[in-house]
Every structure is written in C-alpha cells, then in structure tokens.
Amino acid sequence: MAQSEAPINDNGREIMEMDRAHNLHPWTHFDSFKTEGAMVISEGKGTRVKDANGQEYLDAVGGLWCTNIGLGRDEMADAIADQVRKLAFSNTFVEMTNEPAARLSKKLAEIAPTGINHVHFTTGGSTAVDSAYRMVQFYHTCAGNPEKIHVIAREQAYHGSTYASISIGKKAMDRVPEFRFIEDTIHHVSSPDKYRAPNGMSEAEFGDYLIKEFEDKIAEIGADKVGAFFAEPLMGAGGVLVAPDGYLKRMWEVCQRHGILFVADEVVTAFGRLGHWFASEDEFGVVPDMITTAKGLSSGYLPIGALLYSDHVHEVISTGDPYRWFTSGYTYAGHPVSCAAALKNIEIFERENLLERAKEIGTYFETRLHELEDMQIVGDVRGCKLMMCVENVMNKDTKELFPPSMNIGGLIADACQDMGLIVRPINHLNVMSPPLIITRDEVDFIVETLRKGIQQVTDKLIEDGVI
Ligand code: PLP
Image 1 (tube, rainbow, N blue to C red):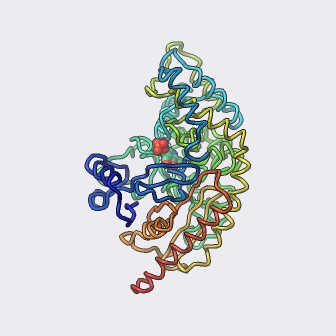
Image 2 (spheres, helix red, strand yellow):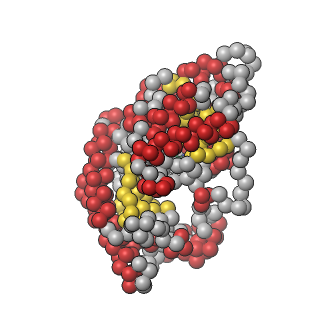
Image 3 (cartoon, helix red, strand yellow):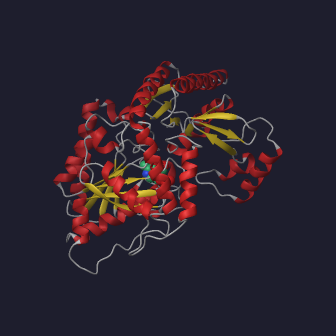
C-alpha cells in the first residue's frame, strides 16, 4: 500500500526513508517500493490504526488476519510486561519448560477438536506448517511406513514461506523463477474454487470432480506413498475460496480410507475468524490428525505458532525406540512471554464471549457485503463470517479478469485508503478479516466505503474506455 497523498510530516518521512533504504519487505515489488516507499503505521487501538501523519483508518484487514481481540489492550500490555519481569526467556529444548508454555499447552488441548491433546510450539504459522511436514515423515517412519512421505495440497493454497511450507502452498504468483521449490514429494490438486468451477459444472458436479481428482492423484502416486493432505479449511490468501458443500469432509473421508494424515492449516481460520476456536470440526465436521495455528493465537500481540496433533500420532511417535527424539524445534518455541500473551488473549476471548460475537457480527458482515454484488465489476462476494473477499472482474458474464498490470485490487484499496479504510488487495481481489470486536456501525462503514471505492474506480475505467 502506498503512502497517502497527504504531505508526510518530518518524523514520518524520516521513518519512511530509513525503511526504504534498509528494510526488505516480504512480497514487495522492488521497483514501486523504490519510488513510493511504504505506509508508516504508528499507532493502533481496537479496530483502528493511525499513520505517521496522524491519519486514522479502520483496519478491515485485521493486521494480517490476526488482530482478533483488537489492538492496544492494557491488559495484554500488563500480562506481557509482568512476564518479562518474571522470566523474559527460558528455552523448552530437551527437558526444560516454563509455566506459561505448560499452561498454554493444556489450554490448547482443552479447546482443540476431539482427540487432539498434544502441542509442539513454533514461532509462527510457516514454522508450524514446516513442523507438521516433518511430523508427517516422523510419524509414518515410526509406524513402519518410511515410504509414506509424499504430501498432497491444493493449487492456490498458501501455507507460509519456509522452504517446505511455500512448496506445500502453490499460489501461482508466488512460484517465481528466482526461487526453487520441493517438487519431488509435494503434489497439488485443484483448488475448490466454486466461482470458477470448470466447464460450467454445477456445485455438486464440481464437488464430485474434486473428490475424484484427489482419489486419482493418490492412485497415481500410490496410497502407500502418500503421507498427508494439507488443507486450509477455508482457503485464505489464495482468494478466500469457498468450496462446494461437503467438500472438506469428503476429502477427509478419502484420507481416512488410505491412512493419509489430514493436516488442517488453521493459521487463519482458528481463534474466532469463523466463530469457533477451530473451524475444522465445528464448521466442517472434520477431525484432523494435526492442526497448525498462529495469528489469532496471540491476536498478533507477539509472535507464536503451534502444531497441535492427535493422541494417536503421539502414541505412535513416542513409543518403541527409547532413544528416539523429535529433532525439530526453535529457540523461541514455547517462549514464556509469547505464551503468556496467548493465555491472556484466550482469557479475553472467554470473558468477552468473542466466539459468539464473531458468529453474530460475522453473519451481519457477510450479509451486508453481499449487497455489493449489484455493482458492475463485482463478480463474486464470498467467504464466511469475518473472512471475506470481493472478486473484481472486467466482465461479469464471462468472469474475464482485468489485466494483472492494472492492479485493480490495488486501485480499489488506494481509493478506500483515501477514505479512511484499509482493505487488502490481492491481485484482482479485495480481502477483509477485521478484528472480532468490530461493531455494526464499523461494518456499515466498511461496506459503504468499499462501495464508493469500487464505484470511483469503475467510473474512471469507463471514462478511460477500459470497460
Ligand atoms: N498458513 C496460512 C493458512 C496462512 O494464511 C499463513 C499466513 O498468512 C501462514 C500459514 C504462515 O504464517 P506466518 O506468516 O505466521 O508464518
């Protein structure tokens, strides 16, 4: 997102200049960064952030799908400060632990789906997915199936940016030629993009097609070689893709028939975004073998991630050879301060009944956002509760996209930003994942501002003869 048009104050300019000179940002085009720099965010409270000019915005992106309880809570600051004073760091390698890590592992076991009672802490979502990938190999080898190391995921999935996690994901725009990816043991099937189902298939036909494609892929690789299926219950960064009804459960049933572990990547979908602690079981009826999570686990206050896994997996990996050990982990795994922040975050969720609130306000958000479907370039509005997206198209009948060079999502995001709203552009999409504490008035503001932003851009495209 570019710096706003308003003249930036001296402090803001200094920050922007030093950032531009030294800070390599994730996923930022070198060229535009050189000319525009980055927007400097200086303060945040609740659903709002301020830039270095003091300009306030409603952050409908929720940081990056993560500020679930809202920014700037004193209680969180106190819990973090107290833990820093008591024990700022202690590692959890080998046979050492700390109180917040122990308490958080128990709490996560309590709120996780059926039969998931074990936690391996990580530093974020990518490292949780990476750990899951390694755990798959470890499990099958311990179970006497060392060949079962191939994994299947979906096109357009995003699972993080370590070498393994970005290889499990497959967003087309991330497969840049300058990087290499693990390709010999990681395979992909179609994304369940209902809006773009091929050959005019009905939802039911598309569902059957996807299941058959998955079964065919397993047969092609060999069921004795496929160790796991990785899936976000609702695909996020790939475009908030809503699958055909019953899809996830049917994919899980296929996994169960072939002894394939189901890894639910709930880095985004957990901690209330869909109105549940975890969406797999409560929203989709799937009981995964492993869950990866991060983001809402601390509502972004501090970095933390976790791989949660089942009693069955634990039984297999922890019995047998007495010298076996899980040689995977991070200095900051089970960091006492991050764990203290996550515990306080969960306490706030419980006390303020935020899961119920997310269901109620999320349903309102969904309903109101669908009103934008009457607009000339809005091809699809989709998502669930507080994980929503608008797909902009050049032609609603053919679903033809604008050329990527036009950056339609970016044009709309910039127009909204000028009106005090941050929405996330991903190519032709505008994606939203606001904090769970968002109010009805704020939802109204998002929908009305987005409508104005889309209309402004549409008018300009008409004026320029593009549409
Ligand atoms: N998995 C999913 C589904 C994600 O959306 C993300 C990040 O957006 C990740 C994994 C990676 O998480 P992190 O950026 O914390 O490493």
